Image (cartoon, rainbow, N blue to C red; front, side, top):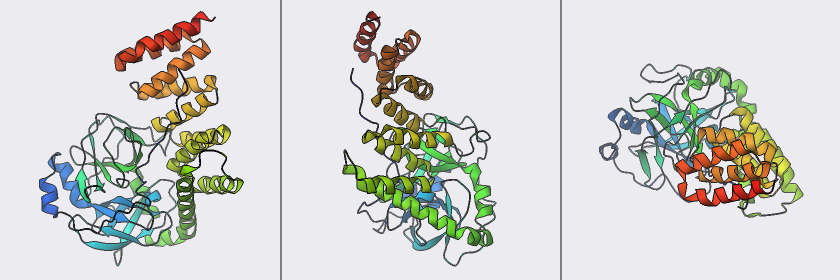
Length: 388
């Protein structure tokens, strides 16, 4: 069994550089709602979800008041004017309100709007981390050029924010390019979080419990005090994302200038998603020390992030650091035991380390989730242990 290629994590913010406009005439809000087959409280969020266009990307936003929109920090970057389109097709302009909360969220305030530091009484939030499994993403769909409610998730893993305050909710909630900034709600219509990123299988959700601190820091007076640092970090986010995009076709031997500029920008961005992407890119370049450094920074923010754990496992695997890889894979399989790539890696690691207990665990999970792969995996394990 040969080592697998580095995992390629595709993030939902990558509406970047797409020649898609959100200004084409949409369906009427009434038609969009009539086509929604989710529970009524979920469908109601369609009217509170907007499309967002910046010079860099198309994304989503969630209206938390008539004049306030919540979206991801990585969507806004350092742009000071954002174009917004409502479900009914109205085009408006909004400006980000600077803050100093270390979370991938930002509040946009529609032009000529009022103060931002009060949570609207009508907004129904779910501040608690719980055991809810069925979560819906409500977001702007680039392909359909309209807002929609996606199929519900089958599971959701909630973090302990008291221990890891920047950790995220991880779920298989459906999400597509352009969905960053969309609402994530339960079947009762409570706002659980804001979608941030995903790989097509597992989505990362910012818990809505950060909203009170964000509103406090984003008050008009406080926001003015944070403006310089806020936009400087936003520029680093944009620079890091642009450099990663430009580097996508560089397979080997990137220039020294690119390496230095990329590292500085991505470290300054202090963004978990970009830490992940940088770590994956350095891994593709077989620069494993840098890959490990970025992925560990991401994992320090969110220790149970499946996407990060898998990327780090691949980095260790390609660098033949099986001792380091084993505990990372073990943690990943606790979260996502049916992942076929992770199970193949686990079989290889068990054989390399001559670890019978880990081999039995990997083969047992494979028998449940991918039984067709068991004969070859067992043959590999038998051969590895026969060499003792």
